[in-house]
Length: 330
Image (cartoon, rainbow, N blue to C red; front, side):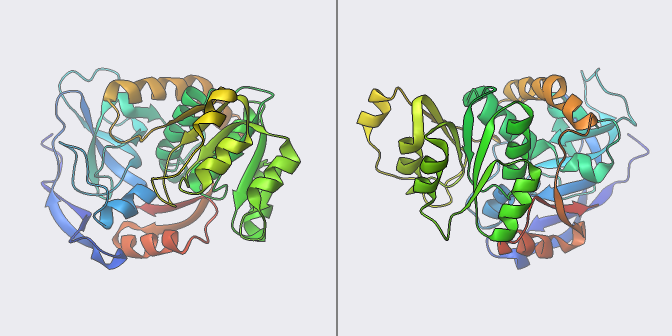
């Protein structure tokens, strides 16, 4: 620990507001507690929850850093008591509880994974938040299986581009909604079987016509989309809600749920236990890391900024012109 610097550069939220409230500053390097790893961060990413936290709408869970940042790739700089699976100097990527907009951050050891073979730090930093989220919601909660049909909203987002590739890799037929023709082209090239431009279509009618009904919906929109999603599900269908961009409330038919034996579920990732996240990490390492290493799937990186330009990186994500991830190097 003595070789570590006393202070680090990081980006903090000075007050709730727009991208301009993200300001570089200097803080002490955090110390890993028992069961934690201190990571020297090489790269991190901008995610929608970071924007919500910046706006004052998504406070960090108790005990987590108040700095934004939910994923990172870097080098193990120090080990907390009881950590035996990693050594100082190992290269890792990690799902962080917060704090990765910094030169150093701490993370529970079970939430760390090795870099997939052939991956650099930037590529690896684009993995944790999206891949943990998609693995848990599409495959653990949604129980998506080979031969089934899945509707993925927001297909051009980091979550969407990940979900499309994973669903295809595991043998599903993929329907997705996007905002523009350019995004439709991009997600089709990633493997989506059908991309519906929601601004130009009655997307639900279009999905129904093309699919005859789907087995799973990955819903990051909610609001008025929710009853439409349930109406698209086949018998024993599953709708998994992971974000509420159009609002957290909706009027749905309990009759449809009963008659068609539907499952409506959902989750948020950040508040889940270290034990749960460790289980997800093991599933990813076993089932998904080999696909990444074989080149069958890949993270899609749209644009990269230096950490000190976090405000510009947030503004880029909020413009919603991206396909894939907005990243930052440290």
